Image 1 (cartoon, rainbow, N blue to C red):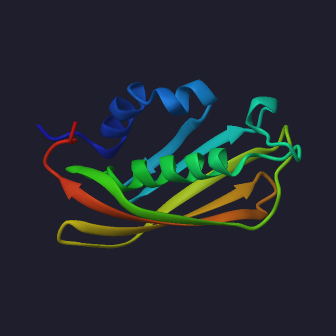
Image 2 (cartoon, rainbow, N blue to C red):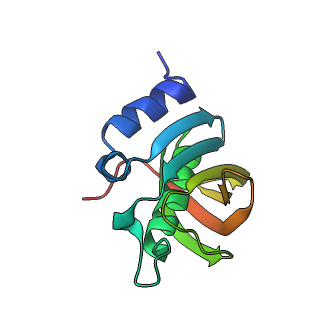
Image 3 (cartoon, rainbow, N blue to C red):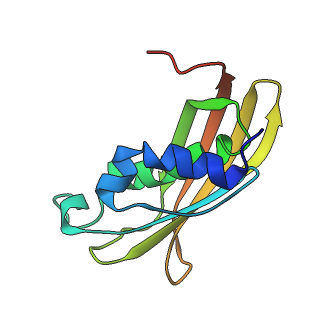
Length: 137
């Protein structure tokens, strides 16, 4: 029996200690699409008092991971880049929406938009995935 996108995502999320530790929530997963969210905490800010770029990248990368793994088999990041557009202070709610742009053979391209709760875009991310038969250790 094959797993649904939601079942696959829940199983993956149960093992995702990075997301769970940071309070990132898995809000929605459908075929080639995922939505994750988080509230920015004081532990996530840099010396300027805004979210550290690494945490913003992590949120976008996690959304990319769930979208690219929604159908199976295992997809891993091959390349990713992010453009930071606006600063985000403590207390803001962020939503990252990942959407598959294309998937051909073993490769996929996904775009992730990270927004504030008021829908203002704070970052754009593009991830390239590769399908593998198992996770290399």
